[in-house]
Each structure stands twice: as C-alpha cells, then as structure tokens.
Amino acid sequence: MNQDIYIKKQWFIKSREGKVEDYYILDTKELSSGSFGKVYQAKAKLLKNDPMRAVKVIPKRLIENKDRFLQEVEILRNLDHPNIIKLYETFEDVRNIYLIMELCTGGELFDQIVTHGQLSEKDAQQVFIQIMRAISYCHSKGIAHRDLKPENFLYYDDKPGSLLKVIDFGLSRVFRQSGQQEKQIMKSRTGSTYYISPEVLDGQYDELCDIWSAGVILFILLTGIPPFNGNSDGEIVKQIRTGKLNLDIKELQVVSESAKDLIQKMICKHSQRLNSSQVLQHEWLQNLSQNDLKLSLNFDSLKQFTQQSKLKKIVLAQIATQVSLNEIAELSKLFQSLDKDGNGQLSFEEFKNGFKEKKNDLLQYFEAIDTDSSGSIDYNEFIAAMMERTFYLKQDKLLQAFQTFDLDNDGKITAQELKKVLGDNDYYNKIDSKFWESLVKDGDFDEDGKIDYLEFVEMMSDL
Ligand code: PIT
Image (cartoon, rainbow, N blue to C red):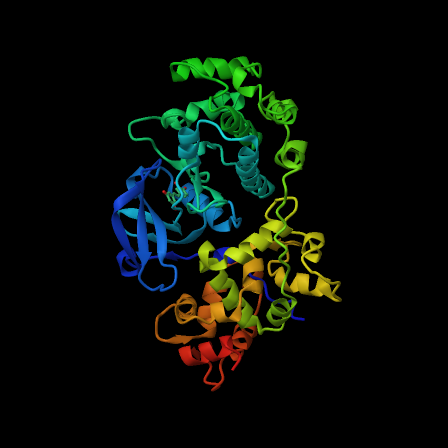
C-alpha cells in the first residue's frame, strides 16, 4: 500500500484573490450581524446540487492585526468536526475579507431556549453532548473558544435531531471594537456576561474557561434562567466573582442529581473543574441511548479507496473538503456513531467496531485512510475514503476539483501546479521534483506531461 502521500485538508481550503461576485451571488438580506461583520446567505454559481452558503463579510478596517487574524482563520481551516461550522474558502478584496461557510438554517440555540423556556432533561442531554463534543475536539487541538454562549450555536436545519454547530471560533480576540479598547470584547455583546468565568474576568485563563461557560449553558438549558444574574453587567460580574452557585432553586427540583453534580463540577474553582473529556465521561452523559444506527462501514468502498492512485486520493480529499452536510448525511451519522468518545477522531479501536464481520489487514486500511499520519482518522479523511463513486463523479464536483488544481486556468494541471497546491509545507518542501512528475503520470494518459480535463475525468472514473 502507498504510504508516501500526505494530505492535510486545510491545503484545499483556499484563500482566493478573485472577485467574490464571480463565484457567489450574495443575498441582500443579512442572516445575522454577529461580532465584527455581517453574515449573508449566498449561492455558489458553480455548484448545482447544494449551492447555498453563508458568507461572513469582515471589513478590513476592523481588523487590528492582520497576521493574527489570518492565524485565526487558519485555525478555522484546520478544524474538522461535525459540530463545528465548516469553512469552505476565503476571499479578499481591497475592503473586505470573506469567509465562505456552511449555511445553517435552523436558528440559534438561544432562540430555542427563549421559545421553550427550558428543555427536558433528555433534550438538554442531546444538545449538551454536541456542545461538549465540539469543545473537547477543540481542546484536543489546543484551541479554546473563549466566547461560548447559546447565540454561538446554530442548528444546521430545522429537522428534528438536527446537528448543532459552533460558530465564531476564536476570531473575537483579534478585533478592534469601534471606539473601544480591548478587554471589553467579552462583555460587548448583550448577554455574554452571563457565561464569563472568574479567571477570564481576572485576565488569566486557559481552555477550562470554556468548561465554565458550557456549565452555565447547561444550567440555562435545564432551568431557563442564568445561574448568575443581575440588573447590570456589573451586578452579574459581582455574582460570578463570589463563585457561589445556588442549586437550591425550584427550577432544579425536578432535575436529576446526576445533572446537578455535573453542573457543580463545571461551574466551580478552576482547580476543581473537570476537563472536557471528563465531562464527556460524566455519568449524566453516559446513559444517552446512542441510537446505534445499525449502519456499518462499507468494506468495498474502503478497499477501493486504498487502491486508488496517489493523485486520485488527493483529489478525493479535496472534494471531501467541499461537500455539504446534506450530501453526506448518512456518512456523517456513521462517523459520529463510531466516534464513541466523541472527540471527533476515530481511533483504530473505534474504526474496527464499524465492521459487522472481522476483517483481516484492517490496520493497513486504517493507515491508508489516515493521510496525515496523525494516528487517528479525521472527519474529512473519513468522508474522502467513504464517499460513493456516483457522488464524487458528478460533473460540478469534478470541475470544481479540477479548478482547484488548475491554478492558471489554462485547462491543464501540471507538476508545478500540484506542487503549489500541496507543496507549501514542511513535508513536501523536502521532496524532490520527481515526486510531482510521478503524480501527474497518474492521470496523464497521452503522456504530454499535463492532465487536461478529459484525462482528469477519466482518472477519477477509472475508465
Ligand atoms: C451560518 C448562518 C448564520 C451565521 C453564521 C453561519 C456565522 C458563522 C460564523 C461567524 C463567525 C465566525 C465563524 C463562523 O468566526 O446565521 O451558516 O464570526
């Protein structure tokens, strides 16, 4: 089996310099005006099947430190989890930076709470486990959100059981508030004071501040009221600083001891607080009927994937970065049901459980899917390996993929272009030019040293 390709999905989430209007039609109506910039619904001109996207338009004048900002966007590019908003690509023009993202149409968790007052314990569990999975995944990557609140969780659509997605990742700290100095940021949006941990108020914190905020969200999910309240931000802050959590309220009388125990272990002194994997292992989240979908991994797709040429695997990884949840709903559910500890990555053990029967050589297949050799299978790697042929062979998918690699738009992919798309990193910088030429050979059937679109389609369909 080929071990010598190495793929990171963020290489395919491009920053483009072309005009955003050439690729997307932006709606005039705002979806939301979040912190720093407005979000619009948009339609991708090139995509047929699932063209709707959300576009966040960020005026450059609000960006205080461009490098820092781009670093944060890099983080978003890097994140790969079903409960985190997906970034497809970015654009930049003279005035703005545009983040092209997955479109969520199901509304904010905040609105659900406002409409229902409080949730049943069962519903709260379903919501909360998704929140914790997203947090746990981020913390495992060394990233803290720092501004968790119900406004920052969106439902993907309005079907029952819809996925919840975190938005606004870490971007908030790199912005200048119009007319204000930093530090105000956490308090600047209505309501966000409720969720701030005492350490953040003191200005010295780590990722456990997210656990505190999540604890406050859990409290609100179960009771409909915030644990620390007051008539002004100042009063709320005072309450938070006392650190006294009152669980002796009538709204909590019907709530299980187990849930209250968890809240207490999240909203507490930093030194006593659970970390995200401990929260996921807490008994309140254990008896969740993992509605085991009775799905299992399709061994044939897997086998097919591992036998593909290197270039074809690379292209499949690119296509996987651009699909939307609608198109791979079943695969996404399968991934989540296999991911027992909910950290968003499949270990070999978890992967093995996905097969009905015992299979030989599974470790080899596992390693072939793990194209960044991280030792576990990421969400995007999983999708790339398990996508159906009939799906990735759709015209618009192939054309979009081709254009990602055909950088100069001349209708041909060359070794230099492949190097440009993949090669700007430590791994490939060390590799000599023969490698890029060998990649081109995977699809260059007329041996002219380039891959044109027909050859590309031929390669992808194994004709
Ligand atoms: C949607 C729908 C919507 C808002 C968003 C996405 C916003 C996403 C977002 C906002 C950020 C950020 C990352 C993602 O940093 O109403 O599909 O500020």
